[in-house]
Amino acid sequence: MTSTLMRSRQPALISTASRTVSQFMNSAEGNAPQNKVHVIGYPFAGGQGLQGPELSPGWLFRQDWLQDLEVNKGVSVEMVHPEARILWVDAHIDANTPASSPSSNMHGMPVATLAGLVPNVNRKPCLSLQHLIYFGIRSYEPEEIKLIEKHNIPWYDSRVCHPDRLPDMKKEIDKHFFPDGQRTPYWISFDIDGVDKSEFASTGTPEGQGISLKFMMKFFETFLPEACGMDFTEVNFLQSADEDDQQQIDMLTVRLIVEKVVNIVHHKDKKKEEIKNSKYQYGRKF
Image (tube, rainbow, N blue to C red; front, side, top):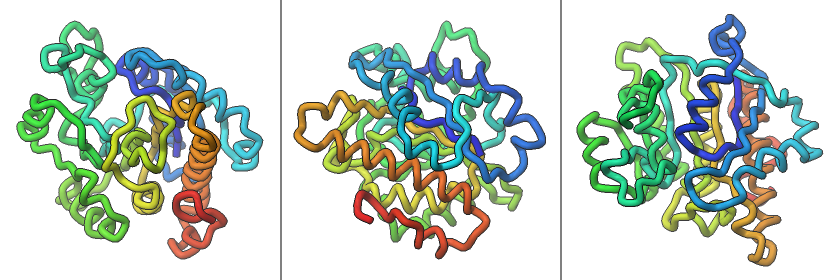
C-alpha cells in the first residue's frame, strides 16, 4: 500500500502527484497486496488563500515517532491504479468548475479537474465519476448537487456517518461498485475538514456538523485492508496556533491517525480483534 499523507488538495497539485509517481502502482509489487507504507509529502498551499498547509509534510517528516513506524519516506509513484474505487471523505464536494463556482477558486475544483470537466486543462481525465463515493459532505453549490445526481454518485452526508453503520455501508458500497463480484482496490481520499471542527481545528476550511474521529478510525479499519493507497489533506496547524492547547491536541490527533493507518496496513492480514486491541484507540483517548 502507498500512503500519501498531508498534501493540500489542489487540482494542480493532484496533477503533479499523478505525474511524479514512479512505476510502483503499475509494477507487480504495486498491484499485489501490500503490507508496507510509503509516505509522500507535497508542500503546497495555493488556491485557498491561507498559509500553513505547505508546512505539514515537513512537520510530519520531522517527528521522531514516524521513524518508529517502519515507513518509507519520499517514495514517488507514477500512476494510481486506474480501476481503483475512490472513497472521498470531505466536507465539500470539490466538483466546482469556473462556471459554477461563485469565487472561481480552484481550491473547490479538484474532482471536476481530475474528471476532465474544467476547460482549458491540458491533461487527460484520470478520475471516473462512476468510481467515486462521498462521505461527510455538507457544504456545496447547487451545480455540484446536480453533477452528483446526473452521474448517480452515491454519497453519505455526515448525519448518517456513524461507526455502527459502517458494516451496512460497506455492504452497500461493495454492492454498488462490484455487482458481479469482480473486486478492485479502494483509494481513500481523506480531507481533515470532513471531521467536525469541534474535534479538529487545524484546517483552513473548517465546517461544523461533521463526522467524528471515532467514525474515521472505524472507517480505516473497514476499508484500508482493501485499499491500494490513501491521501490525507488540509492539515494546517497555523489555524490553531492561538487557541490555547488546541494545536498540540490536533498534532496528537494527526499522530494517532497516522499510527492507526500504519498499524492497520502492517497488520491487515490479522484478525480485526487484534487491530482493535492495538495501543491507540479511537479519537484522542487511549
